[in-house]
Image 1 (cartoon, rainbow over the protein chains, first blue to last red):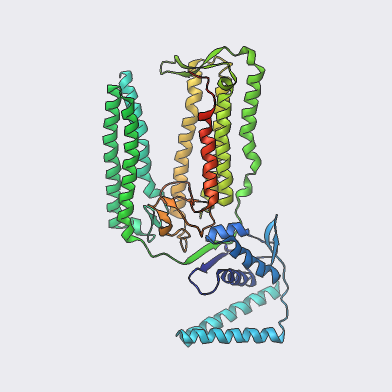
Image 2: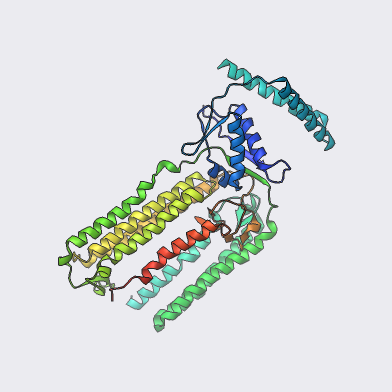
Length: 139
Length: 343
């Protein structure tokens, strides 16, 4: 069965910098197995043209993901997805993510997002992640 | 039918091309655009949209009727300057009709979106390598070499243009510019087309990969057609082809162009109808001057799809767009400064 064509969506009005939005959205797609190792991604120039934003913004997002071991950036052959084993998070890293989650929850509550909606989103996202991890382990 | 009447009919038929294109264009743009204004995708089916379209078409055809009357009068009274004036009035009338429709649509514009979306698939333009642009130059080079080899056979004066009865009415002399002129001009036109293809491949944005590929294929086809016509023009200096053969050879390219254009228009219509509405317009209305000229410094694209019409337009905020314009204008205007040997 053909895989759906992955797409990326950013919001220029968001307080989150655009390069971080791109890196986060791409990371989510990579974690969610939307790409396989060796899959090509659009070049920096193409993605910048398609989104109508500066090349450096896209280059910065790609650089972050390359440093995390997700992407291989080569001048001639373009951008390709790398095979990447899931690392074991250290205690410090786990604590950092817990803190970020707490901050995000606090921000959501401060903006009046209903608790039920948050619970639904969070459990849905966790189930999706668990399903993806299980299917990866099975293959 | 007298010759004058036939010529008047020919002029009017040519003048009808512009209103005909303008008549069709509103139906060839994306569902989210109407007279170069960003609207809700279903807007074109509403009553206000139909009213604007109806009046726009009435305006362009009224202006055409006036201009056609002027052109017919110009032909029968022998005033060629009136033909040029008619052409100017026709273009101005079409632009004014568009400006009116654009202004009428503006109140229905949707607010600018901050959302941008892109598919994460590399482009497939690589199906046609850069080597494909070398072919026309090879053809022109071969024609030039052939003419050079047969230089002694070329008459001192040879026909290059014929009237409707097949009698020569334009001549060239056996000089470098007279014989190689068509090859040089053909090479310049091919160079313009190759530069355009390069710019579209490297610096353009088009939501439809199919239209982009079609444009590139059309440009390459045009290069080969121009090279073939120019090569034929050069070989005319040697071989005294019968006028009928020349007429057929010369009328073939316009027929091919017309057939290709019909195919292109149908493809554009099909693609525009099928394409999904894209989240977020990377080209906000405020960056379009009069809906025709795109000026957006924060957009890296040098060439973008036209909002009203088929093909691409320049992003005038990019220095590369001006450089491209200068290169193309230089190549187009260069023949005016080349020595002439025709009369």
